[in-house]
Image (cartoon, rainbow, N blue to C red):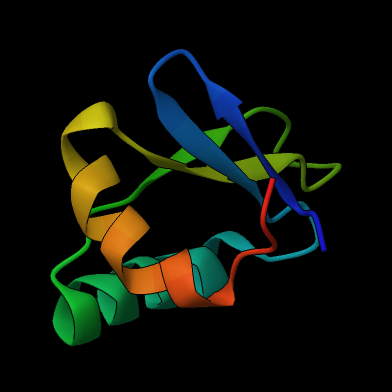
Length: 73
């Protein structure tokens, strides 16, 4: 399973196939349901090369949310 990567101290979720409207819904859902703050990084609007970024500050919460679903390293 892989559709993201560490970048600096945060995480990028590779959401390239999602429209900006869909990404806005996802950002809102993450905040509403999990108190997780994500931002949209627009690389190329025409080719849908957009990603969600979760900052270093949010990493402890993200780790807690997903740790039971991660494969051991």
